[in-house]
Amino acid sequence: MKLSERVTNLEPSVTLAATAKAKELKAQGLDVISLTVGEPDFTTPENIEQAAIDGIKSGKVSFYTASGGTPELKAAIVDFTKKNYDLTVEPKNIIVTSGAKFALYTLFQTILDAGDEVIIPVPYWVSYGEQVKLAQGNPVFITGAQSNDYKITVDQLEDARTEKTKAIIINSPSNPTGMIYTENELREIGEWAVRHDLLIVSDDIYDHLVYNGNEAPHIASLSDEIFHQTVIINGVSKTYSMTGWRIGYAIGNAEIIGGMTSIASQATSNPTSVSQVAAVEALAGEQETAEKMRQAFEERLNTIYPKVADLPGFKLKKPQGAFYLFPNIAEAMEMGGYDNVTTWVNDLLAQEHVALVTGEGFGSADSVRMSYSASMEDLEEAVVRIRRFIENSK
Ligand code: PLP
Image 1: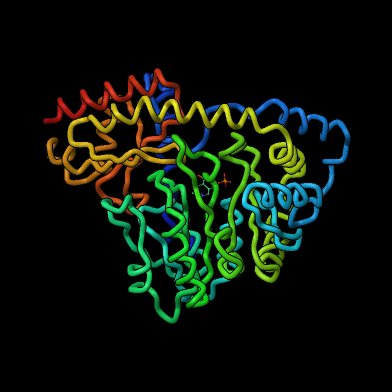
Image 2: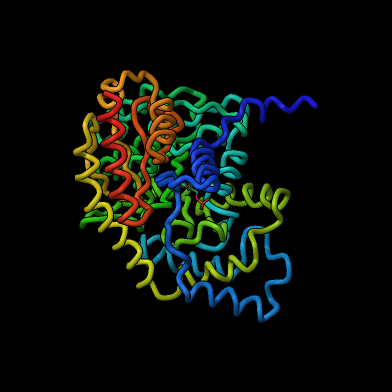
């Protein structure tokens, strides 16, 4: 059967593809170190698991929930948002979704008509552009300069703005770069968006994974006007090591959230009931375990960053958050005679059994993404192997 143009034109996620390839080689018995994953390598904290078990035993999770999430979870999100961002929101401003990814998906379906444009800073998280296209929108990519930590400026935004522009995406800390926008930078972007009545999509999924005394300011917290112009995207996946539970949420104006909820009601009916019970405990329960996981990432970053930055032909500033390194490897590629980063990544996997993700999926033709959500032992061994690969390919 001829598949739809939508599907035919869809780029599959390079991250999931790289992870799958590494798993396949591992299953064949090869000693593969995979630094591809976009998820914490810890199991979900015990108190959260226990809340889910108690929920199952109570029998209450046997049934559909409200499409936009249970009142209990919405109440927990209201409190969490007040406590963490000093923002006052009501349940009507919240939708709970099957992961933050689906919050973004329903958002684009809600706000975009054919030909509407969304400005996406490069390097970007792999799904933004594809989700905009699935909603018949046009992604407009603008590249943050490496010298500006890959962050975009208002001048660049202004150059990209047309009468079709509907929204911009800000992801700080960023996947893949780990860089954070300063309060001033966010204020400028926010005021610009308010001036031109553009929606700010603030993907805050890594906002609790920030290291070495850095802070991640929130664009929505900077003024009432900016807050009203923003849809916040967040979830429990990364902070609480709950990627498999699939709980994300969006906070925004009631009309947009209502539209998103209608779409979700026709697409999934509701996010999984037991996961919602677990997410209440994640947001409202003890936070020490999440803090310990954050500290573990910080330690790994501090150990591995200097070693990766020291690899021949690698250029990399120290990330401030998330759990990725995104070195520019243009010189390393040149040393080995490579003009394509994906070929470099494939050869590294074939020869040294280290799996990284090609920068191409993030809009960057001379970078690779390395996740440090792996054991220190694997991280150190991966660096040894990458160095050997570069030296042998000279
Ligand atoms: N936004 C960014 C920047 C991400 O990296 C991810 C996951 O990789 C998501 C959103 C989606 O997270 P979730 O697991 O909640 O769907």
